[in-house]
Length: 462
Image 1 (cartoon, helix red, strand yellow):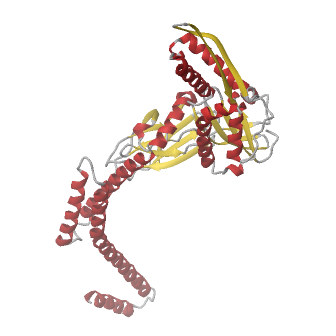
Image 2: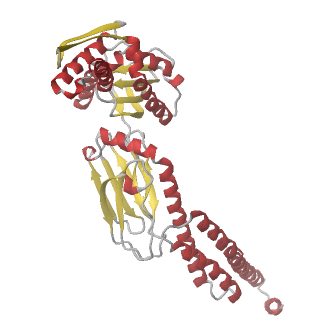
Image 3: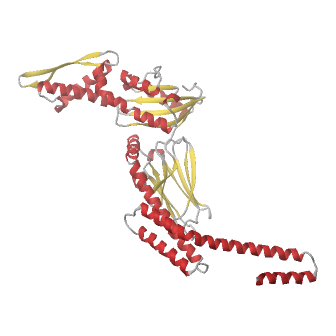
């Protein structure tokens, strides 16, 4: 594959206990992972279990004995099920013969049944189909369609099953590549990667991706992403944040991994505090947060006060993150709770926006109190009070708050706009007066100077 040029490859890996799908772009010895997905609770063992359950159910119907109740008997069933599954990859039917499988009232009982490939396909069809959903998600993340894939590589012993190969062929629209032993391909890949890391293999480069998003906790417990899921590493992202309160002396940076909208539902990788922020109104300090991941998956997070240059940082090793099982679990939870999380995030963002509007309106009223009439001030304060009262409620109604924000904005816009227009007109008049004075000064005529003074006075009287 490393000799290929600009090809998009899907690696379909169905092993004994897990399923993974990876979309790669290969060119001139560089393997760039575009996206990954899968199911850590789906594999060959699940296919075996379907055969075990079918054998046990059939035997129970005939003999009223559940073979799964005895551990030794169950182990014999497992061995027979796996053997039958393997045989059905090359034949259309197989005999499952287990003499003296258990003891009945009349004596020993034997299990002797025929399992066909068609029956096995019927028993496991939904397992095969369930692998296609992660395939579609991986393609969506890579912004590709099945027809864009040039090659499909099968990995894992379970991909020997004809119905699996057929499903993959139908989904991607092309015959899967069978030039490598699916049982050995992982070992071969591990050996190549060991050579790359050891410096012995120099013409192959693997560019991995982040399996989950990385970000920080922001106002209201919201998870703000800096590095999105499936971003190729190494990578670096920066974003500027600010304080949430007046004269806030420090900010705590909670580094998170996950894809839920709320910080509490994601995994915290570490925390650190940036101190020594000079006193200032909220929203004024500029705190630049930088996320940097190197090729080894080590994450460096720093926070810098752009005004003072003060900086704090944390380094998070790749091993301190999540296991494959935890990653798959969190991805599944993110999908299941997507709508619920979006609503909660929207509610918090509305509250934050309303809180900011209240703060800015109160500041503007204080700063412009000499320029606003009592009647205008009273109307604004009435709308302001209604919005503040709504925000004190434990369970706020987002639509009501939005409506009250609109009412307050409609009331304040013409008032503040008029003040700004007056200030702009006054400034323009001062500039014009200054220019007129400078123009007359250039004449150097004393009488003209007196005349100019007179004209200015005349304008002032008007």
